[in-house]
Length: 403
Image 1 (cartoon, rainbow, N blue to C red):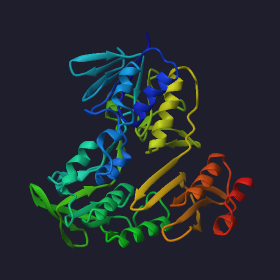
Image 2 (spheres, helix red, strand yellow):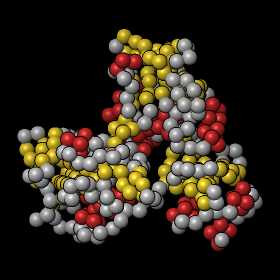
Image 3 (cartoon, rainbow, N blue to C red):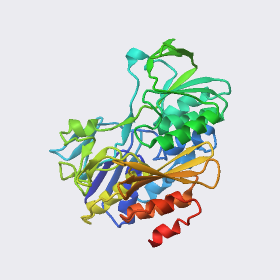
Image 4 (tube, rainbow, N blue to C red):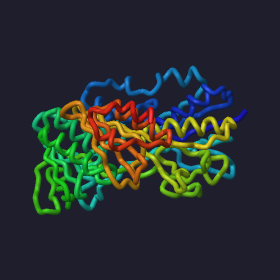
């Protein structure tokens, strides 16, 4: 009987095994996860869960009973130490699990501050999994002082929660502006104004020199010479694809685990999907860090294991919740050369449309779900949008669909 083993019990792993069973796969299925809880949603960790608005069980992607009912061998709190490709076995401590198809959905790992500048002090946290958020949650009391290192979406979401709970928040970003790596200046300006309006002290173009403290962090010195007193620190300086197992097994690595258009690695018996995998796209290779990509790519791999022979074609979209603003992003803005701004229905509402020449690449929509949906449909269909219609707040966006 064909045995599919999946290493990584996150969004991609859970989606893949569910797709196998929903698609009629009758072989053995084993899902291996490092954490002691069933697969769960990560995005709410730094938002509703940290705010205390979501219970643990509501984070679960599927009830724990789902795996037993669908004859999925879910192994939790399990540490994979290696892959024996010659024997087609996964090494789990003293035991081995044989596979016909192995899928790596190992996700990503957060970048941490070096120990030499205080990164190993108590009270220095990253935001990645349940234990990270559970560890920092007691510090979220009114009046507490938190330093957030990094002005990307993770850092800004953490800042929004902290400010909403009455903490004193300082956020430092080494680049010239927050969101510089992922968004246009217009989007950076929007979120800078939003956070400053909620009392967050944002310092751009200022890096961290070192954290201070004896055992537990108590302060920080910035590269401009200023010093801060802090109760704890949240580090949001990006993530890296979790490729250690793949590298040790001798698989090809290229900005993640290198896969072909169907999701196969350099070993045809091993597949990869989600944050950890880079795949062919638009004449090059990309790796996407998002929930939609984890789901869609994992489901495509599941179908291909069952013989579909499908090429994975991403339709990228992302989101972020900060205070009362829902940011929805459609497309990839790489290579844009101009921005068209569409005013929204009022304060806190706007959308920014990214173009390369005459071609629409992406849309950032803040509290503007219609702009997001129209932009996404156009981008997914390979179409563009008349900039004059986009810029005119009186113009009906449906015109773009008809055009």
